[in-house]
Length: 132
Picture (cartoon, rainbow, N blue to C red):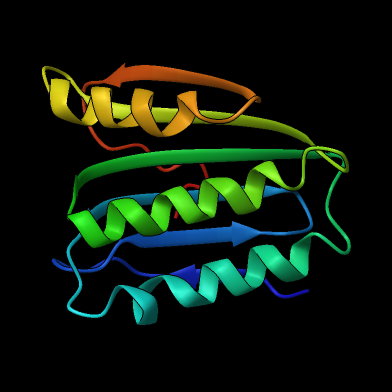
């Protein structure tokens, strides 16, 4: 399975997925006109990943802004990741900028629905765990 690296723009999120190491990073601003087009590649990759997933899957979310459609797609991504729970040890970090209570609460709302380990962490700035 191939890695995925999508550079973020002012409207599209940054996405990095390394299936071999079980690492997914998504962040930035997400307000694309067509959310299906923007999120389909990662949803498809997660679907493929479930067939040969790593023992541990680390997911990092660090969004500055999500529109309603993007929020819905992130919920779908979380459900797809949740469906890996019997095959992979899932750990999720949701980062939010210092003082951004809306993004903190959004993370709490989205992650509360799923029974896996997660942490919501305040960050002074954006984080990219892959260093890309």
